[in-house]
Amino acid sequence: MRPRLQVTGLSRHFDGLYVTHNVSLDLDEGARHALIGPNGAGKTTLVNLISGALAPDAGRIVLDGDDVTGLDQAARVKRGLVRTFQINQLFPRLPVLDNVALAVAERRGESRRLLAAPRRGRETVDEALALMDRLRLTADALKPVNELPYGRQRLVEIAIALALEPRVLLLDEPAAGVPSAESHIILDALAGLDPSIAILIIEHDMDVVFRFADRVSVLVQGSILVEGSPDEIAAHHGVREVYLGEVGHG
Image (tube, rainbow, N blue to C red):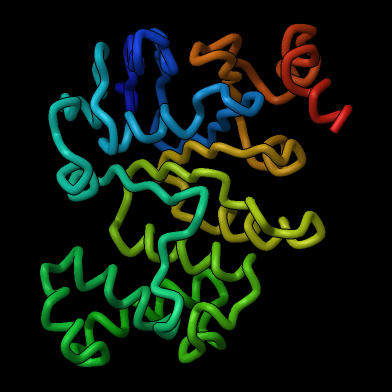
């Protein structure tokens, strides 16, 4: 079976220093894959390269058999390669419903009309409400985003990403800023997603990683150190030295 997303030999340097070096990564349909690594390992840079926010110096990005390396971020989104951000990109003063409906309208090519009258267009609103219901956000529909707890704001961002109908979903630290006791909210939402979507999660919270992922890749100084199952990664001596040990010592 052909990988849904295939990253081959991806490299990027700034001022002669490689921040991403010869990274290869495959995501099959339905993959639940985590990318971990110490601070400064280049995780967000890698997501920026895959999503099209940055151009690589070398390497290829193939989505469902099509080379998208030369496409910009918007074109990749239209093909189903969607990301969230470490710091959310929401409209904080708009209600949750409007945030999600705007994303639906953008995908449908109706965003200008919706900005003029956010609740015009019954089909758009109905689709937004259905997405919110899947993420248990319906009760917050008319609340401004900035009035929600941060964990629920992260759910709104996931709803927006789903509104774009992803085939591959890149989640950049979805539990960042969410209290550990509430991380189950994010995990429950991810568990309820369409199982055909391939998901790559970048996350520092190892509890979230090991509860979510079937495969884990460890990035160190811009290169993949090792890839394996969560049990293999947890037992790997090199990983414990460069990453898990760092977490254990704060």
